[in-house]
Image (cartoon, rainbow, N blue to C red; front, side):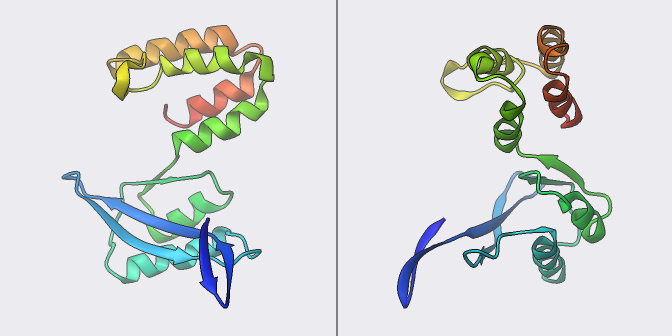
Length: 158
């Protein structure tokens, strides 16, 4: 949300599309100003992705998004071979709603062991194999109590 003066000052949502080439170069593909109250939906993103395709984004390998319902189908319409993956921050935010608040700290601590290395010395898995092993331990600890939570992470490719 950004404060915008259009006659009067109001909060408006802004959406960004950022591309990363296979060489690792980042590029801002576009910024779109939403209108308050309209919300975003799959139909809105179909227009955005179609615009990007028409402007020359011929193909994508991954589309990382917030888990909006209908978005994987929209991406498949625009770029049939693209893989849609939920952003890990959105995945965490959405998944913790499936668990009891009293376990959040413990679950978060164990999930950090599954994640890739982070700056600042945060404990994490040094390799993909180590991450898989930690996820298996995590599943053993929490799978029976919170199967839907564990399923979200297993289905996300984490």
